[in-house]
Length: 311
Image 1 (cartoon, rainbow, N blue to C red):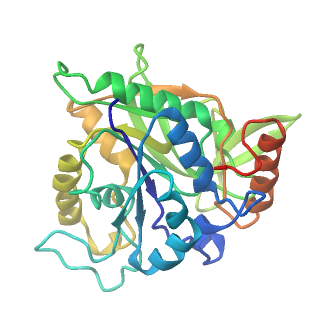
Image 2 (cartoon, rainbow, N blue to C red):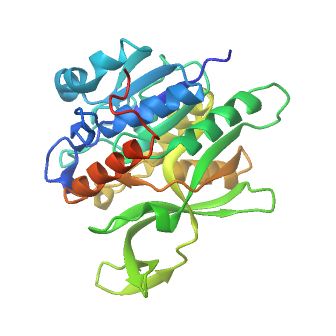
């Protein structure tokens, strides 16, 4: 059996959630958090190791809430994403208060990650289908013979990934005739609309205007299937990213969709989009929690999950 790892990015500060640690909010009937369900689905799909990417200051709370429990059922490791963890020759801007984004998060696993892996957000529920498809693709594509790296991404339908309580950020995707990604555009403030009972979506501009967007578009939810060589790409790219920063870019982030998009356009990788129709939910906003709790209750009542998840 091939070893495959699930990376869970859980170092976010959670500012839109009111300053709390949103990744550790209980949403299941026995105190389960969203990560519990993602880990359950990943192990069921065939992944056999978990790496939690956290901040050092979260470590004690994180292990008490979930880490110590998961260590009893599978191999677990920790990586630490810190604002000050940047290449030699660079200094942290004095005004910078948050880590450098999802690219830096995955890069923090360098040295402890040696097998094909999937990466997900801690506060998003992805559904079972995506884990199975990504795991199976990693197993198939890790065979020798490919001239360039072959990665994958779970492609969700935009209308299935919107919040009722505010705008969300999604990577809007374009694909070719072989269902390979050709473009990923990180798009902010996508707002859910409802007209005649039909879900739609618009992009809300900073000055209040709206731009329509196809609600059937494929989007990235930061669920990628990658191989260890990707970390070398991240390391080189992070230095380039920092070198290009200007003073006004103080909040800029080194983001996975942008990194993957550059690899595709330069012909250095191909990325297969694996379509999934599961409905996303997560706690982007504090008001989302009630919806998430009700959604898991419905999944349990329908037999998708057990009342006590890991019993």
